Length: 273
Ligand SMILES: NC(=O)c1ccc[n+]([C@@H]2O[C@H](COP(=O)([O-])OP(=O)(O)OC[C@H]3O[C@@H](n4cnc5c(N)ncnc54)[C@H](OP(=O)(O)O)[C@@H]3O)[C@@H](O)[C@H]2O)c1
Image 1 (cartoon, protein in one colour):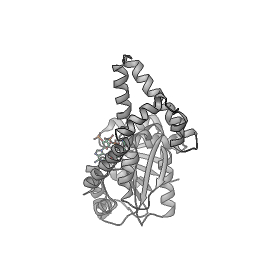
Image 2 (cartoon, rainbow, N blue to C red):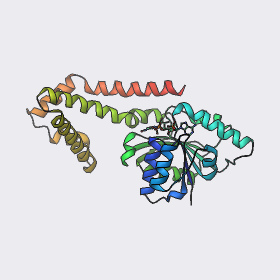
Image 3 (cartoon, rainbow, N blue to C red):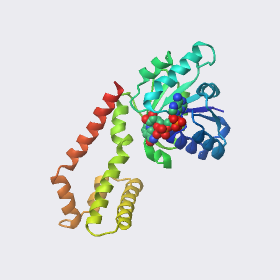
C-alpha cells in the first residue's frame, strides 16, 4: 500500500487525514509529524495513524510526503530532508512531494530539497475541512502518471480538484477558490449586519443569511444550468429582486469582484518572490 506522511499536523493535514480515512485509507498507512505533541497524538488516537516528532522518520516511512507547514517553514523542512539525504539517513528517490503551501514555488521547493524531486503544488481551501474543498493541482515535469493519480486521490478525499497546466494558474486558483470562501463570508456578514438594522435579532439574522446562502449554493450544485439562469428564474420583471439586482449592477458589483480577485492574484505573486 502507498504510505503517506504529513509534515505538520495542523488544520489542513487534519482535514486531509480525515478525508483519507473516511475514504478507506488505513490509519497505519499514514504518519503525521509535528514538533508539538497535542495535534499529532489526537490524530493518532482518533484515526490510528502513526505519529512522530521527527520529520525524517515520517519522510522515510512514506512514498508520498505532504508538506503541511506554514509557507515560511517549507524551506527549513525541505533543507532538513536534503541534509538527511546528503548524510545517508534517508533515501528520497522515488518519493513525491505534495505542497499545500501558498506562495512557495516548485523551484523554491526543489532548491531547498537540493534536487529535482517530483513536486505537486496544491492550492486547497478551508471547506476541505468538511470534505467540500476545491483544490487546484499543478505537477512538476518530474511527476509520474502514477504519482499524479496518488495526488489526485489525496485531494479528492477532501473535495473536488482540477489540474492546472501552468504553475502561474495556482495564483488564479487562489483568487477563484483559495481565498474565495472569505468573499462569501464577507457578503453574508454584510447581509447579516443589515438584517439586524432592519430589526431581526442576532440569531434570526444569522439563520436568515446562513440558510439562504446554503439554499442558493445547493441550487447551483444540483441544477446543471447556467447560474445566470437560476438568477433570472427568481427575478420577476419589475419585482423586488430585480430592484435589488439593479442596485448591485448600478454600483458596479462585477467590477468590484474583478478588482478583488485581481488584488488576490497580485498579492500571491508578491508572496512568491
Ligand atoms: N487551512 C487552509 O484552509 C489552507 C488553505 C490553503 C493552503 N493552506 C496551506 O496549508 C499549510 C498549513 O496550513 P494550516 O492551516 O494547516 O496551518 P497550521 O494549522 O498552523 O498547521 C501547521 C502545522 O505545522 C507544524 N509545524 C511547525 N513547524 C514544523 C516543522 N518544522 N516540522 C513539522 N511541522 C511543523 C505546526 O506545529 P506547532 O503547532 O506545534 O507549531 C502546525 O501543527 C500552509 O502552508 C497553508 O498555506 C491551508
